[in-house]
Image (cartoon, rainbow, N blue to C red; front, side, top):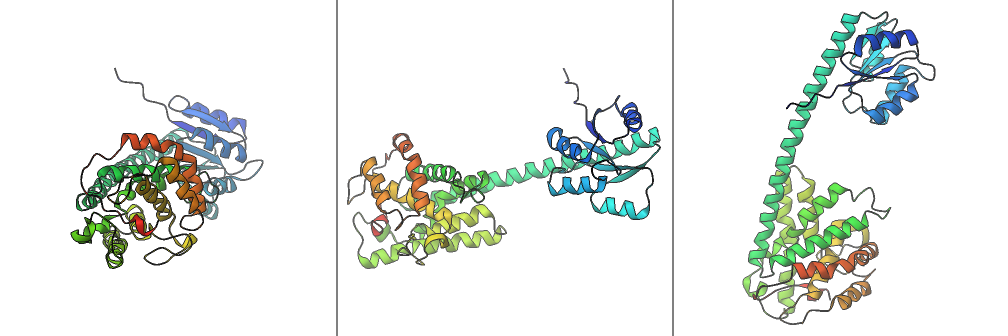
Length: 368
């Protein structure tokens, strides 16, 4: 059985009872009519009830309709809601002012019921068409975003197949990065930067931090022991290789923020807070925040994972190693956020523990 279609809401802003009664009489059979007697009340109701259309009188007791509309636009509460001015006398200068402020039409008093109904109907139909187009655009954008995420995940898998580190490493660091970021956004210093969209992009980009390893020779990448100094210099180039690959992708995708973030993480996840890292010896806030978060996640994972040249560190010992490098290798704020989620990590590692018997090559020994 078809559900009854929800009635559209019209907000009438007028302080004259006669005008309100006339408009309610014209509109109430087809629409839900809400009334505001002042400009301030109109602003409040627009935020609260989200009307589908606003009829706004020019002359109001607290401020005129033009100022009311200006405030609505400044507060960004209209978001596509059409506004029609009501006025006893519409001269060309006033109409131009209202239209410049974003009004879609003028209705003059006394009201002609047929004309009021037609103008409102036309504007609501236009709004519904715009809303439908926005929905189609949003749907298409979401499809493109999903496609990009799948492509980036697949690209990240190249590093997994090329480097014998397991897929579990990628999953674990991805989860740690996301949880650190979610904790870090509670810090006022990062509240504006680390939004929910930023966290989503960061988690998607995280598996690409070692994509540059696809360019490292097998003799180094798969060596089952510590690297020589020369081999380590070659291994360190994976940060630059990964960055170069991903920056080329961003050019093709018009500087997509998700891919740009992946490039920054690939380049900067071995930089140190004190400037003693590589490849560019950046320090402190010059290192992108995503790379600073990945640095902690990557080193923690390396510490608690088995390597051919070391046994895994216990969780508590690994956490203390991270703490020791707070303010030297790692951003102090990131370490503090890491400590807030550290108790969750043993459970994550139980779920995504290594099962591969392949030889593992990791370059974290250059940091620790």
